[in-house]
Image (cartoon, one colour):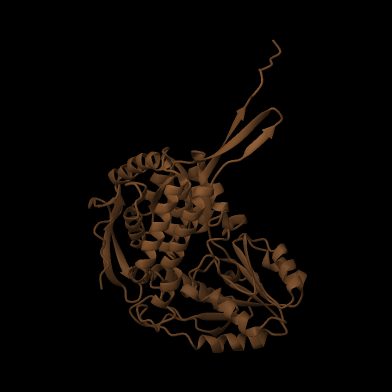
Amino acid sequence: MHAQPPASHYINGQYIEDTKGEKIAVMYPANGEVIAEIHAATPDIIEQALVSAQAAQKVWAEYSATERGRVLRCAADIMRQCNDLLSEIETLDTGKPIQETLVADATSGADALEYFGGLAASITGEYIPLGGNFAYTIRQPLGVCVGIGAWNYPTQIACWKGAPALACGNSMIFKPSETTPLSALKVAEILTEAGAPDGLYNVIQGMGEVGHALVSDPRVAKVSLTGSVPTGKKVYATAAQGMKHVTMELGGKSPLIIFDDADIENAVSGAILANFYSSGQVCSNGTRVFVHKNIREKFIARLTARLENIIIGDPLDPKTNFGPMASAKQRAIVLDYIRKGIDEGATLVCGGHAIENSGYFIQPTVFSDVTDDMTIAREEIFGPVLSVLEFSDEEEVIRRANATEFGLAAGVFTQDLTRAHRIAAKFAAGTCYINTYNIAPVEAPFGGSKASGIGRENSKAAVEHYTERKTVFVATSPVEAPF
């Protein structure tokens, strides 16, 4: 089982290698096998990426918006045609089941390319009448943008950042997570095949020092990061030194509130999507599940019964619906949180252990009797660990739900739609759900508040973060001056 790319980096429309860079082993999380080896970017590789991105951006900005859109829509078509191959690479890279990656990864990336390809020609300014005079605005590209990806959705993130950046006339240098470095290379290949100028979308590999070199370079105008809050704070601080534009899509500890009038099956489905999809490795997960005391026992019983339907196995097997952690490191982190939950007095309902095989598997885990002050209720775990917290009063549960530094997502299940909208309005979170969870269509803005991030990805809102307005004042009468 191998997924070795032709070279580690994709720069100026071709694969480039520099073996002087630190070697990075790429593991298949289902069995720990090394499936590829790549090298981190050296200073020479970083320089090549920056120089070619600068040159390509100038060429790309001269394309008409319709021409840029055509390239992105062509890339979307190619991505859909290659969905099986891209999904297999994503599964090998992340360990996510193939039945998931076939419908949620490259397809989401293609949606982003198609959406922003269609939107490109509508990115315009406005005319402002001022009596006899007037002003107009122009939306201009920022220049070279840097995207820094996380390891949970590498294909999707590469496109969520690249598509709006390119639609607006920018170029992009994308640095994937060193844990999942393979998928973005295929995205770059596809964009070249679709007609993007060489150097427009470069991919270089590496760890934090490579990201720092990119973020701190004066030729970079914009940084978009998906990652943890601690990483986001460091990157944001570095970008601020150069007054760069930023988008930060960071972590969360999101609440999911289930009232006693909720449809139990739908609520359990929502809790499963909010905690166990992608083996719990989703930034917006609703890991604090507040369940009304009247249905608490019924909810837990139904949830544990549904979890018996999980099929754990080789992620390349279409029957498998629950995969491993992306790395041994992440598995160790999650197991440590489970131990803390037990030590601090939460009741372990099910799961709680590593699955003894050669991969990085953990049983889906449910805790009940969780209180707001417990570590598992306060810190982001990023694994398949669901905490059930009991509540009885609407005002009380909203106060508790918002009592966190994070503000990425939040959800509510209730058949009282008046209450549902009232709760959604009170959530201190950027992305909220009513009677569903973890849906992220490209047409809708996605992002957080408080420590969970700055800016929005997807939708027309992303255009705000990849363009800069220029105002032009036009006088049509003689200029008057005091002397």
